[in-house]
Length: 299
Image (tube, rainbow, N blue to C red; front, side, top):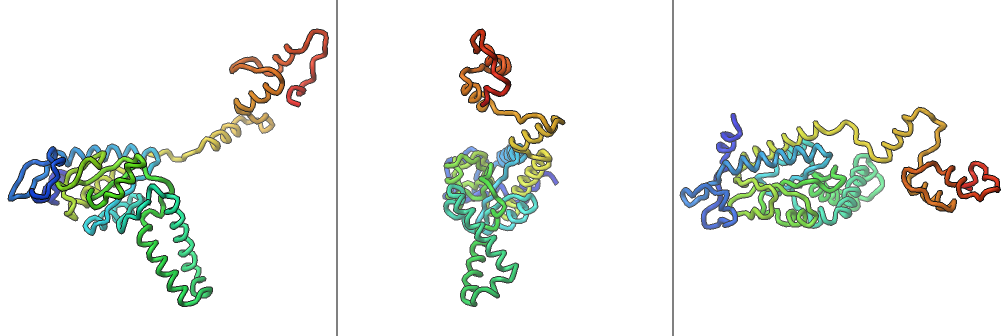
């Protein structure tokens, strides 16, 4: 079955009632039937294809995508497909400052790891009273319910996928403050100005949401498969380069700043690409005086 037929059968083209529409959604509306706006499926397909291309390129650069959908119709699809794609998600309640105050969120996640350790090791039952055990259990349940989806998110996401713009307005505002691109499934009562890549469609249909999230996660998987096998940092790359020289007794290479300080301490400056340091030092010795021994310039 083609994607267009699957979207039409899922009811993605059914919008909200005509009385509750947002005029900014006019370019994405095909017409009206029985006082219900009909969404142009061509615009929906265009948004999905553009979002898939963007997410594939983004995840290929070793960046994550955060999925946000706290409404009941979106929770199942997001949790299922994001778990397969190994992407972070929020399906319970958006905590204020999840992105703008990410340091505090990481502290709460570390607290969750501590509580998990107490529960798994059995120390909670042996080292605490029943009252304290009940308090720690409630704390663990609360943190786990709200933050378990972003447990593996060690850095800010490269993009955000949102279902229902009106419901997730706080999340979109935080993403806008941090300059994080947003991809939104928007119904006819939403505001497309909050989305960098709008996907017009029915955000109340479980089947429609499942199809859209499935297609986006499929493109994410493709991008992850094209990631480089090993991601080396600059320090590791320099270490590997030095080790590959084959001469363990070779002197350690210095940075340009270190070489400049050495030359400045010797009383002269050496331009980039000039001769070795020994030649300028010898040139500064007056005629008739002995040339300093090797290594005197660095004393």
